[in-house]
Image 1: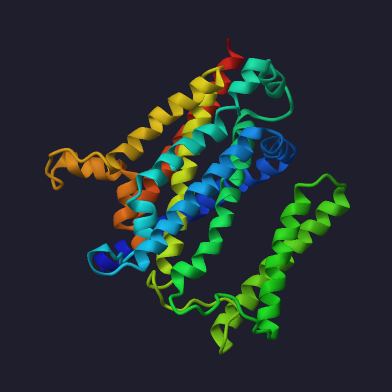
Image 2: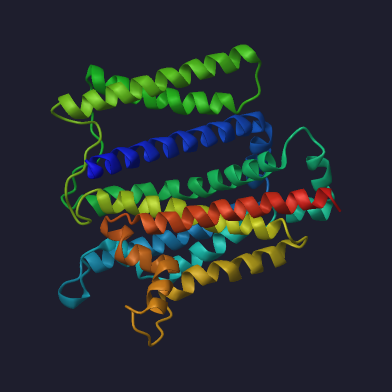
Length: 355
């Protein structure tokens, strides 16, 4: 009886926590929708600045070089071979972590430092937008560009996942698969329309399309992968032991990137010079990266050893994410640091109102 009561109590607490999280996310989503014009402004600004194109070029070039090096290892034999290509491509390469370390500061250094240098930050703070909406809008726009940078790397997935050359996409059109694909298209289209200028009827149409897309993609996708004999998207176990290592790696990159971006936004809100903001952000991010390649002579089972592993992002990918494992401790670290950094950014902006 006590154990059953404890289980019920634990389930109730989880439900309550889940409802609170959903309520907070809904509140933030509404606030972000109200500040959508600011999101468009910040996201568009990246394409009006040459630094974004330079960052995107060198990022794609570095990932391409690492992919080519990984393919060379895959064709090697004996001790030069590699069992987990993603671990070799991401977890073991200092070049990747060098690029991963400097890109977030380059993307965030201008967000608030440029506003302070130009004197436009005060104007933004006097607009009908709250400080947390301002911070969240800049973060979402920056994060959207960060995600956009990773889209070209999706072309490497079929090679890393499928060893026998079978395509990861093929035409299998049924009622369920058509509903699934149509729902995905409707979701993307509705999100684009929601962030474009328009009257209330356009917004209502976009919301209706979003609801339709969610229902069609959910129901159609579930029936397609549950009942249909062949699937539109499928993976054949190959070099990377199926899609799990790829999925877990991208999950880790998404949250680890969010952490470094949030740190960069915090630093940018504290200084006026963009170069100083970038250098300080790199120094702070170095604490999460250098421990992956700095190997002090300490016991890995000691308290210090476990603490270093807990903050070592390269070790997280080398041991877990690139092998198809998702450790919630790593995700908690990334999410908590990101949320805390954004909270401090809001407090930093609020303190300017009292000066």
